[in-house]
Image (cartoon, rainbow, N blue to C red; front, side, top):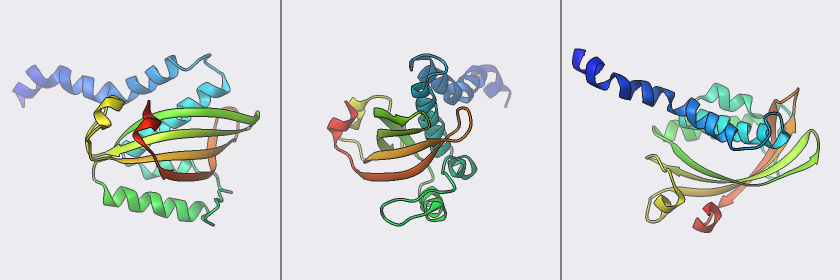
Length: 166
């Protein structure tokens, strides 16, 4: 234990700080601090962190009570899909690319996100070539509940192509 503290202490601190640091980098590179686009990018970053941490409570909080999609799923059905995914995958690493963000009015937006789900970390689109990962494109319809609290009203997804990540 002393060896871990003496030699691995800095590594442990760095690893513990990685998710918050990544979130801050996403926020810093996304435009004005209070812009609606920045709020959407923060929402996607929170969803990614919650997914990788397999945090069901935080993931459920991202879904609107009035969620309904074209396949007839409601909030409860989507929560069950999320729960099933978490139970099936002990380790989830996501690599995401945010596409178009469109505001239909100040409290409603759509956003397209390409997501690669892998069993190990992916830091660049180049690493997806030859990697065994599930590639999806999600089209979210979001609603603002409160000042900057966005939730998913509906989502559609399909398999993505490698081109969706560049």
